[in-house]
Length: 442
Image (cartoon, rainbow, N blue to C red):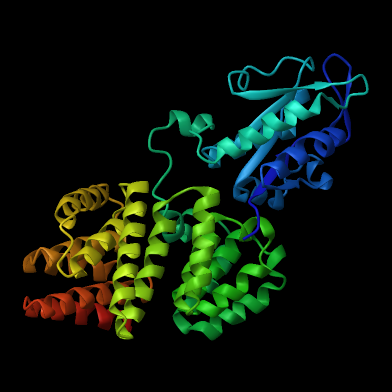
């Protein structure tokens, strides 16, 4: 997996400070900022000079939003740089590192309280005493991975970040782009994979296409379960888009569904190592181990299956611990604990926590399919027929893509099989599975 991208916000060429000293910003980039970024195992990406002519172009917005890390040079209080920093702070909770040249003028009041790294200039306006500053900048970039929010917006607005899974599931509702293309892809998803491929062909060079359209295309392939097309699309994307957490997570999902579980595992574990834990990344990794467990079980390798089941449970638990609000990995951990022989006693402690999380989500007025599906699985685990019936109705009414009820039906089938072996067969649970399977088929 390539190193995460670090976008650099700064002026170009030589610019005067308020005191009249010229700063050679190209030298600052080449001699100070770029080496520090590379020392932090990141890939530097500086805005093209033509993007700084007074109009902020779409590629600039996409890089500001999509790049995992950013370095911003506040020297001379350049208007474009400050506009870009404001946009960055609005969409990224952390991983934006600030620096400025000492003696180059007072920082504006709005950014003066923010943590910024000073660097020195020599008489020619180039960076001086670079070794210590490079090291300090590289250290701040490494720390930014796990740091508390550095954006004033995320620091002051309670609950501003949302559950990681939702960034994918509600993408089309939250991102504004060409309404005609949005309608085209919505219609194509109803018609099948060939129609989605036709839209993709009409887009031309994917790297130059609007990022929101490319992501909708990517998720449209997911909707029609065309995993190979999802995989093939990623190398065609622009590098900032392809490197985003969402794309890499969904690539891992597609690789696993296409039968490339080891490659999926590598991408997801690299993602966790580089970007930190999240409920979504661990949730997909748990599915990778779960599928391997099923394959080992079907092959009659019980020892391997037992170990893989433990790995799947551990991954789902880490996902739930990464964000207690996201019940999806929690319910998967509970369900797999039920499948152990004997059942894992930890599930009795975990069920109330998962239940509380999903009920809070539903009470918020913003539930999605997975919230209702979680409530359904909890009811089946509790052998609550009335609760399962009510949750089933809500889940069926909130299906967005056919693979969603298919996944839930499979989970319930696994619970059914495990209980049948223990002599705990529940007849009405089979009716629930069949209703979900019918919904998945159309």
